[in-house]
Amino acid sequence: MNGLSVSELCCLFCCPPCPSRIAAKLAFLPPEPTYALVPEAEGAGAGAPSSTRGGSGIMARWKLHLMERADFQYTQRELDIMEGFMTKSSRGNRIGCMYIRCVPGARFTVLFSHGNAVDLGQMSSFYIGLGTRINCNVFSYDYSGYGVSTGRPSEKNLYADIDAAWQALRTRYGICPENIILYGQSIGTVPTVDLASRYECAAVILHSPLTSGMRVAFPDTKKTYCFDAFPNIEKVSKITSPVLIIHGTEDEVIDFSHGLALYERCPKAVEPLWVEGAGHNDIELYSQYLDRLRRFISQELLSQHSN
Image: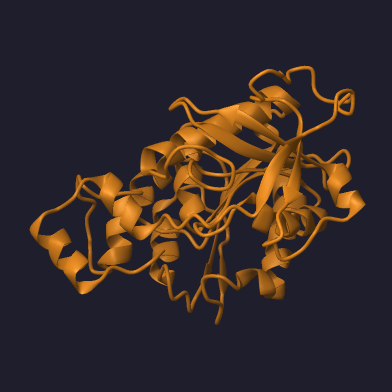
C-alpha cells in the first residue's frame, strides 16, 4: 500500500473516483518479474496430473526459473517439489500458478494470496519454509500484471484471479474445499475475503488485513461509500469458515485498527494474534507467528474436523 500525495487527496475529495482508480492508487506495485516459467521437456512430466493440457501452455506442466535479479537460487530438492503452470481467468488473463509439495501426504493445502510488491519468484522460498513448518502444502498464484501473469492489476481482476486459482487447485490436484486453507497477506486479504465469503473452506487466515481502501487512505472514514475499493469490512461477516486474523500493533502501512475492526465484525473469528511491536512486513520474524499458526492448524482445525 502506498500513500496518496496532497494533490491526489484533494482530487479524491473533490471528484470521488471509481473503485478501480482507488484500487490502483492504493495497492498495485508489481515488481519487475523475478522468474520465468519454462515448459518441461517432452516426457519429463510423466507424473503430471491427467488434467494438464499442452498447446497454448494453459494448464501444461512447467518449471520455475529464477532470473538473475532474484535474491537466491533453488536447490535441486526445491526444484523437485515445485511445479508451475498457467491457467486462465474468467476475464481472459493468463495466470501464473505454483504448487509446492512441502509435506508428502499433508492434510491441508494453503492457497496463499501474497502482498502487493512481490511475485511468485520472490515468495517461493518463504512458501517452502512456511509449508514445511506448518505441515501443509502451498499453492499460490500471481495477480494479473504480476510475474508472468498477463493483463493489468485491478480489483475486478483480483477476484477473477483467485477464482481461477481456486478452480485450478481443485480440478488439477483434486483438493477438496474442506482441505483448503485460504491465506491472504496485506492486499492479498482482498481476494481471500471475497472468495471465502462465497465458498466454504477449511479455514481462512488474514495477515495484516485492511478493512477497505478508503479507510486506509482516510483513517477517520466510518462508512463504506459506493466508490470505495476492497470492502473487506462488508464481506467478512459472510465467511462461514474459521477465521484467524494476524496483525502487528505497530503496522505503519495498514493500521492495527483494521485488524481489530475485522475481528469484531467476523462471527467466525477465532482467537486472533496481535503481535506486539510488529510492523507490516516483519510479523513472520516473531516466534508467536509460527506458534499460533501451528496451534490453529494442527490442533484447532484437526480437532474440529475429527468431531
